Image (cartoon, rainbow, N blue to C red; front, side, top):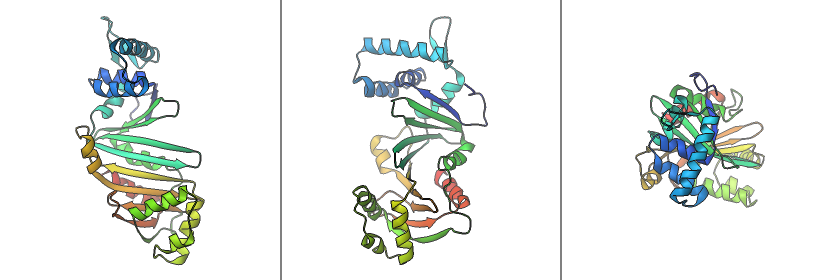
Length: 273
């Protein structure tokens, strides 16, 4: 495990039991209990003790922790640094990527001026974490959308759309009920509207990037009420569409653009800062 290097993104997969134990070892027992409850549905104390004992042995065997002389477990320093943003963060971003054969949901926990940790749960139930120093965050986010950005010179602002109307487009797409009238009602140039319809049908992937303006101290209610700038990306064979909403309110209106790689990198930089 090459976690001592500062110039690269560090990656580790944990079982639910391992991550629950790690969080307990940095005094976030509540988060660890939440993970175990999702798997074991309110296990009793004896079950928890057996589960965490096994997780401890696994962490030691993998080199992610070690046992003190008194028998207690401590995490490897790099592992503790990696998971700390899950317990104490200043910013939270949510990313959803939808491809024809899979969907990815991830949370990005950020400690300002320090580090970030990306957390997603894989189909097999394992928890996959990626960690980096804060200066890497912009380039990291750009890298997870390979090829996004039209060729330089083809970028342009093409129109505006309300989030409520875009959500109706998503619903119609899932129900296979898109029509020419729907796109022409946008009030855009006919050629651009037709291009969007064709690209929506032939999309390689789409992604939603949601900025949640809250911290680890926020309540669930606060998280729901402090939603900031929201981006929707639509990648096709030829074009990269960016829908840039100031909030996720249904009445929020986005500027819709076909963007270049450089413009996309600037948008991401502005979005996270």
